[in-house]
Image 1 (tube, rainbow, N blue to C red):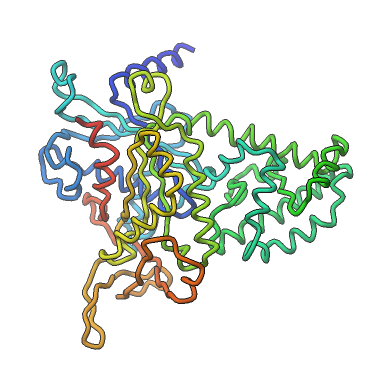
Image 2 (cartoon, rainbow, N blue to C red):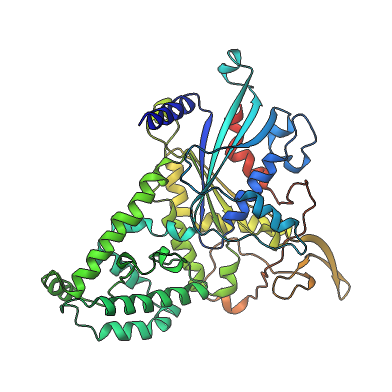
Length: 469
């Protein structure tokens, strides 16, 4: 108990002095969260006090020499797994280099930045200060479960039904055929529920493989040791009219319907809600990442699902300016950064289009945040640069292109990936445009050299510069 009080008091003092930031790095599956945090930490750790910091030239506290040192320190909550920065960097130093493993669970890393104060009144009391940064990483699939907190089992089923079209409808035929044979008013059979839930999970995994990103429940498509627990064995009911819902509600407490409803509620209250209360509601600044390019390779449906998923991500965050009172008692997000990842997979002239597309994808939610007085930004970046810009020539014409090692076959290639739409494309866009937003292997990184990036320093500037005044 004493240690808990001591920890809360320490946090209270830090937040009162505004020298503690909790940054959430969130995003949809395979958007590059782990790469972003690895590069974020790496760029900071390579800052030299009053030295050559050309690798973060857009980050003014480093450029002006006000950052004196940066180091990793022990996190306060020792129950959270440590973010594996060293292992991730080692992947890029290896021969051949490889991408670091994707996020499988929550992790945290803490940095301490010692800096020289500039504008704060506190500089008269103390010339230098330390900013502590806690950075959190967790699977994007967890994020997509947050809407379940405000949905009943019926409401969730109806929401899934509205998304049930196109490729999804084709993939779900076998599973829905089995569900159609059920007597939902009969006494629940544990083995039957387990088997049908497994088929529903297989359906979700197929959707994910086809580029669909609005997957619920998100944890169903992640590997975990608790897969056999009943709380993970339920599925939505589709294509029921109002009278059928009423009939099922009047069925016995041990009916298959009520068991599905019970397990959904348990998942909602025991899996999703604690994650929200323990972590989500405690962040100060938020980064939302999205790979806007890969869905363009798939289909319009995959692209639209990404839009739905993105707009869901920030609905359950607390937004508001960081007054002294809010810093001490009610952590609120005051800066929101939307990142379009894989900016090195397109030519430099397409970066403004990628940023514009990201803005359009989240326009509704982004506009809502701006109305609440939140400072928002949209940036196209590459946390870990895998390609180099080159000038290619074909039929006597020169054009911008990219050079890199293609991930699928390890071949060094030069290609022009195509143009990026600067607004949400119409349905016929996929019939008239061809994309080659290929995946590339990472470049080998020399020992003790910062990770090569594209505009990560702009992200640092937005997220940290004001806290280092």
